[in-house]
Length: 65
Image: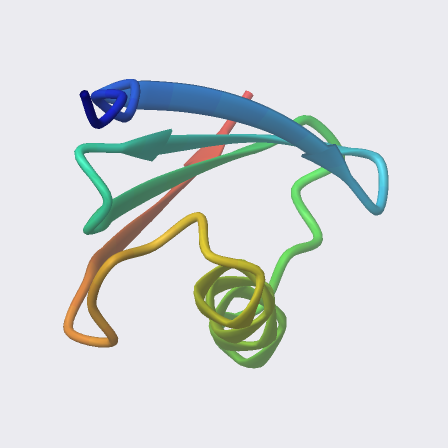
């Protein structure tokens, strides 16, 4: 029987709390307000290559806290 993948995972990467939801949504919690779009893109690419994301067509949200 195949294991069902969690619908939400939290990853701590480069000092950021990152939540991956449903394999195609990424939420980056940016407490220092210094994550640019290029860095977010690189984080998402890394998560895709490591298998956290199931598609390369994702939505990414940066939350400045």
